Image 1 (cartoon, helix red, strand yellow):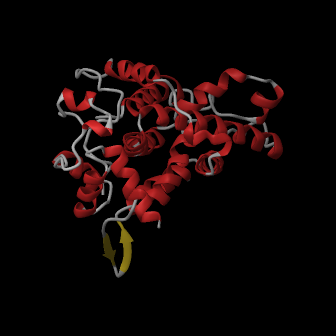
Image 2 (image 1 turned 90 degrees about the vertical axis):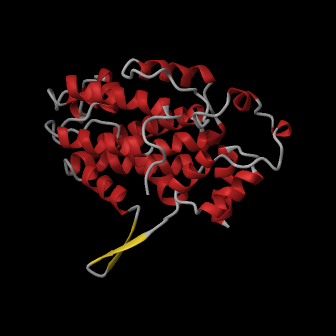
Image 3 (image 1 turned 90 degrees about the horizontal axis):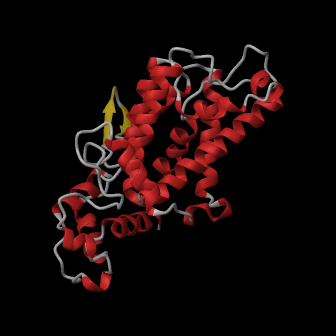
Length: 287
């Protein structure tokens, strides 16, 4: 199983976030690992609020950076599923909710002045494990020494490695991220219906283009190489119900873990709209 087509096609927000995390980590976090970690003394006693924003992006060590960026890159699959505008809301909600939980935990635990939480986008990463667990199906199994594993095993293994990378300093932010993911799934405050204007994902697309030689991708969750006339005709009434599904759409759904026949039928039912087809497949799986 993989995260879909390689690269950042239809995932400009993910690309922008990864670029920001890499820049913060290389130029600030790794060089000064203790500067952006949250601690009781700095946040509660000295009210150094300026630490909060950098702590969302900057990893404090090279191993954390490697595993963290790998997971962020893999979870771009969710931006492709729900679209860049809703995924931007997911990033903001999971990051803020996790950060508030971390600050609350620091205030309750009151560790020693030298104790601080590991910085980095733990909130977003571990919040993403919730839809990964519930919504991404297992496509294959394999056995090692008689023990049965699924193709999702290596993603969980990378997450466990990152969670325990700094032991208690990284464990608590990871748990807070998982709680934030559950809150999003429970649709608190109707958050799952919220989405940013298209200009937000367009901004991330232009921002991430600075690190790439290719032109910015469309902010819509549309597979590339589709004729522009098809992109413009988003009204389902204008798409023939008997249209043959795009082979690239089928490949994308198969890479998400769905079988080929189900993917093809869902695309026909959704009139060749990959977002609607994904929802059809996920709803069918939940019943």
